[in-house]
Length: 114
Length: 111
Image (tube, rainbow over all chains, first blue to last red; front, top):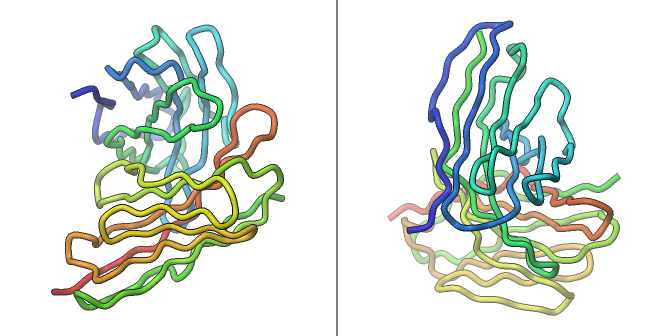
């Protein structure tokens, strides 16, 4: 089945470390997204990419960077991790279609910054 | 400022006990509203898109409805397997991409 995968699924790191979360998809979708989810809050958009050459900041991009290596791959980096970046991170994809933008989510990466 | 509020935060039902979840929003430029289901330890899974007031969509025991300021997810005769967190997400037609997710309603259905 066409899918969205994320690696690693769990990660514990220390303050100040650089960390990369990876997302791959076999859905053939052009659009890819990174979200974080915190208890009691809705999903918040970090970055999104409508194609390989198009990268856009979302609501909460400070402290994060991304790389769109190919249509199927979108990586999220924390250059210098801090404890308040502890959260559940989701990658998502969607088709390029004006009217509908329902998203397909990966299984998530649980990140803990000590 | 665009805002989305889901209520209640948590809902406990007996199997077969019908109820409704609410999503109220104050947004500019609404193009559509999504409902997602999220199981523990998993990513959200798409359920419905609603586009205009009065529209309804159904899937098994779920029916989603929408007015100009709120949407409801009605659950008829729920089963334990309906237990999950349900997220609503207005999608806006402003510049760029903007879908605002609510914090969700955690539904527990007891057999």
